Length: 362
Image 1 (tube, rainbow, N blue to C red):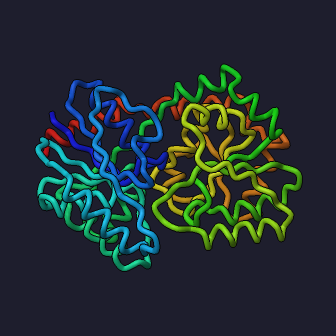
Image 2 (cartoon, rainbow, N blue to C red):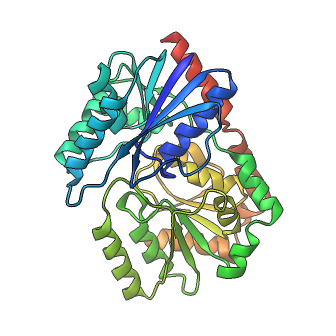
């Protein structure tokens, strides 16, 4: 098959990680794959090297000073729609922006779209983009049954469910090789959160939880989203200062360094308020790192039996503290084995095979 996958960014966001890994799995299976992406800020490539068997087409989005979020959304859709060449057997958009761009370029007939998670937007242009990208595509895929149920309840559509894969071997190898030791030597027994500082990631509550665990370092990695969360970041930093918490904000971490950072953590904290699957948390399990996650239906679906679940600052502080104290029989080495096995069961080749089956059935 000739397959086109489209993603809204070149940065290490979950949907972008998904797109590249899926594309490479399609290529391993012998298919002709092109990944299309919006490239902002002068980017000339993705956050990591892409297998040479995958064709990459980047559409530059020059920065315009003073441009609003809504204006940037519409311009991004127009730029990708004008550039996109849709001579493919399968066209599969991984987000609402690229789904709208394809719709602009060639209509929505025959378009596949993955709904990774659902959001509520206040920017009118983005809210309209989000709605069209659920209603109009010919077929939808979700990465969890919980998100598929939200789509079914809200829009009356029935998406296929195909879970994410994970490069489990990469993260387990980092743990086995001691790649986490330099991070532990620098920061001690740290709690790690990956995804940047934004409302959906629950950063404010995590900071409040860490205030109840004085002396425990908190590292926050990731970022570079499409949206401007400076107001929320200011709120998080002000609250941290008031509580005496000093989070170490690493920003985007080089792809080669990420497995060691994850493997070095004493606890991986995942307080997201909205998720479709939880790929970063699954990578932590692959590295054998204890996981404390918010008690959401989707995260129960994905991580039951391999994580501790919490709600609110007190709940997160309690569960993180139990891990750090080492006094919880559910968090013995056997529990880590369950997490590693769960991560290893989610392969990108299996995810690609499930997608190919869907494509063939139409």
